Image 1 (cartoon, rainbow, N blue to C red):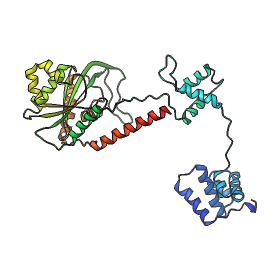
Image 2 (spheres, rainbow, N blue to C red):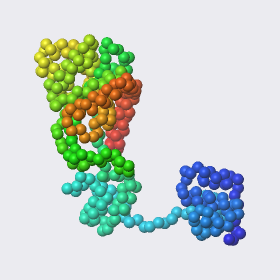
Image 3 (cartoon, one colour):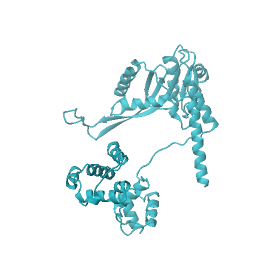
Image 4 (cartoon, helix red, strand yellow):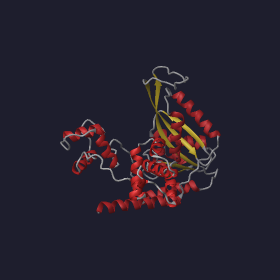
Length: 378
């Protein structure tokens, strides 16, 4: 080793190198070079350094040389490597990105990397391309044409804000047993039975079931939840018609809260969720008797997440219904067991989305809308 490549570190340089090898937030190559310089400064020879860090003696020699001739920064960073020449011209890359952003060809639901490469060759964008090249281009531009995200657009209108304020203000009120707040929602359920018996859990094997199943119709779930006391009640019905909704409201008044003068009911804007439904099904006299006990509070359009019952239905699906249940009786028994266990906890449902956060939500939404409009205009 030439003496002119002997490594001598100042105290500040040593501290910087120690910080690189200890913090672990640097590139692997920089960490390797830092280790080499630290050991070289201690008098280690090239062979020992190369053996200790699983590298070559030429790498150790080049690191020493760069440090002596160009300084610490050059020793850690090394010159920019030329790499392989670009496989696509900028124009070809732009055309490939535009193709990935377009509608996939007939007969295909979405773009895949292989479909993209074959279509690029068929359209004569490039004479030849491998899937890995296309994948790298998509990754560099943060494009995933095989993914689709669902979204629900909500127009922040005065009516939207009024409904939101009504619901979140209702949730913020202290608990009053003489006027409970009940959230109401509904959900369909499929009855699916196993075509063949499954196999139980065994050592080294999970529970197993046959892919084939028997479909035995659908049922509807009406969920009532009183969030401030953590009580839930689920009704299983064969359909989800106006008559079923009207009977569910009568059940709420006459069976669940027979002694309560007024019940605040939070529900969404489904076409059956209206006072007119009760009048149509029961007649005006009976409907007036029931409506005297009910005050409907509607969540904004496309904002049913403000209904706590929707959150509870999601929990019911995950905890109880995410499996095959073959008949209505079994469905009712399983839901009853879930309901009993959850109600026994007497755990109120915490709701933190208050009016202050609702105002912030509206402001942020309007700011994003203005930003999109300005970007579109520019």
